[in-house]
Length: 207
Image 1 (cartoon, helix red, strand yellow):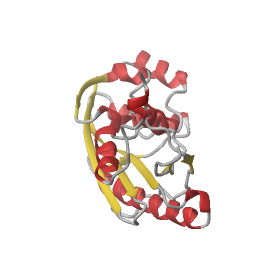
Image 2: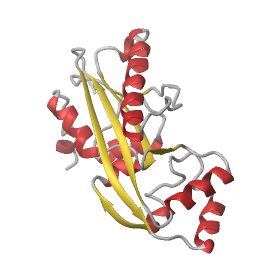
Image 3: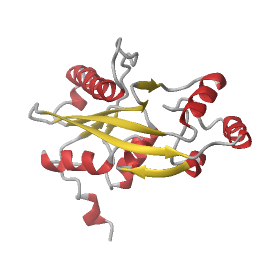
């Protein structure tokens, strides 16, 4: 990695790491941050995604200030929110929460928002908010019960992972698929390239 700026992914999401790796990027450091993800009163899904990405970046910047090995690099944070109208469908931890969320999504369209924030070595801050529209099929009782039994919903916003079994529920998707997985690659890579990070360095060494 010598001669190239460091890249810090301030997220504990294995999906975000896998997406960056898919684009040929291997972060130098993984530094998850713990932000309070509780929506503010009356806050809408898109506003929550944008705010949390910014707050995570501020926390990551504080961590970097206390750790010399994290200084002088690029820092990326992100937050993904599933919204049904003005309603925020949070990450679910219980079977009842998952069942309620999936019943709400069944046969309906919803939106997935990801806020992406970037801090550059020069201290510049950049933000993007990406929106994808997703429509689910109407779920039968058997489909719902089988998906709940799989446990794949656990810890997922909206109680599903589109890259897993629930991909078979999607009738229509308008926008970025990787956004729904957890990190919109086009917009993230565009941010990095625009700020001078050598995204394509590893591509040149694959042959």
